[in-house]
Every structure is written in structure tokens, then in C-alpha cells.
Image 1: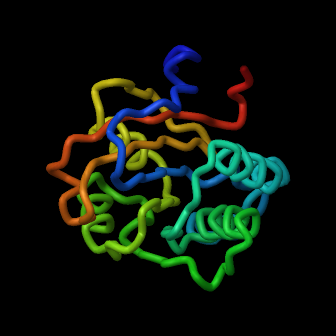
Image 2 (image 1 turned 180 degrees about the vertical axis):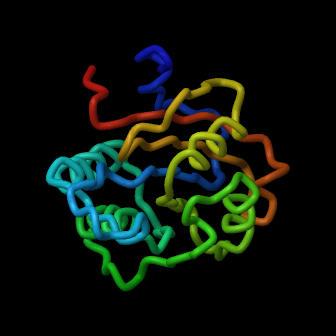
Length: 181
């Protein structure tokens, strides 16, 4: 894991631009052996962590315009809990099947399709792809494993999401439930 000073970095110099929050689903349950991986729900810790992490984002004055999620139960429920904390409707979540166990290319494809009116977007997905994707975004911080309900935030200077892949990106912060400063 990066040092705490890297994790809590919230100062950014790019000015106007778009912000992307990459969020791994909260802790899920393995207790029900008859469910498929897609159907796994959040466990009690996951249900507690998601609102806590949403509040941490609100405390950073991050206003999320668009919520995008894998349709898998645990990712969707995490997105719903963030929406609830933000006073948004769960029905407003954009569900993209390409984000279920997504490869790096799937993340870029999903981002390129975003509506340019959105300034800050939160994408909820799964490991291992989410860790790999986060590590393609900046050289400032590399993570070994995106913890459950972890948030990796970057900003880029453009008014078009289609520019995301080629745009210079600036690391904002990396935070997760067990990160206490």
C-alpha cells in the first residue's frame, strides 16, 4: 500500500476538468453457497463501509454527477448505498455489463461513452480488473490490490470523456475503509 501521505492527497493543480472515482464494490458475502458470483450480496461490513466511504467523498466536497456500475448484485448495491448518501435515486445508476469482471479496455470503453455534461463520475466494479485499471492511470501511485470499497480518484483536464484515455491525468487520492489517519 502507498504511504498515508499519498493516500490522503487531495490537493490538485489541474483546475477545471473532469474527475473520475473508481470504486471497488464493498465487502461481499460468501455465506450462501448456492448463489453465483454475480448474485453475491454485500455482507454486514460492506453495508456499513459503503455509506462511510460515501461520506468521506462528501467531506472532500466531491459532488458526483453520474453513478455507473457493474450490474452484479454487490457492485450495484454499493452504488445504491453511495446514491442514498448523496440523496440520489438508485434508478439513476447506469448499469453496464462490461464492468462485471472488466478488463482494462472495458473501463476505457465505458468512460468514453459517458455524457460530457457529467463533471464527476463514480464507477463501481470488481477486482482484478479495477486494480489493473487504476494502475494504468498515473505513475504517482501504484496499488497492489484495490481493497473492497476502496476509492481511487483522478482528474483530467478536458470537457470530453472521449479524451480520457489520451489525456494527462492527475492523481487526487486513494482511500479505503481501513485507512484511518
